[in-house]
Image (cartoon, rainbow over all chains, first blue to last red):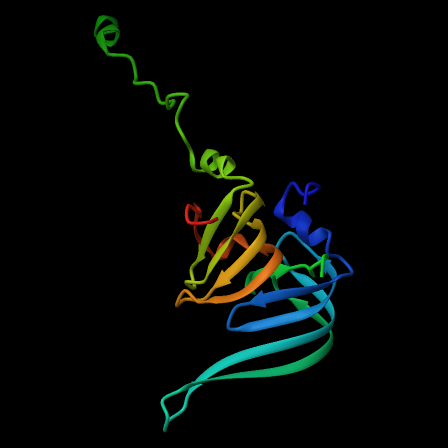
Length: 92
Length: 96
């Protein structure tokens, strides 16, 4: 990470790579980063969107975590809903 | 009239003393060190501060994500955190 001077450099180095993006309202995206700008608006390709929801079982009072997934060919993400972007692990 | 104005005391100097610490000098001082970042949502990130910018966007290494209850949720190699979500950044004294 020595070539990084600003946090956005981390995103620049992830162009054409598969990235993980955490969004508001319990949404996650995994896809290939095609483009981004200073607002973190992004265009992702071959995206898998995961929406996580929690429900409480009426009978057992247990929390049930539900994950629903869908796939999208190409997606524009508005930057203001982005919480976190993580490039793929290079070592593993 | 001119004598009266002469007696006015000079305006107090507005500039802070040169040794003052600003938030930005603190953040620069913890570059490369273990930090703890809390978001507005209550989620906490611990890792090494790689760099940050004026928006408080943060790049971290060896990052661990902790849920609102304090449980370890996931690990990332490198992480970019968008600055608008950040509540505070602190030096992580409990890091190994």
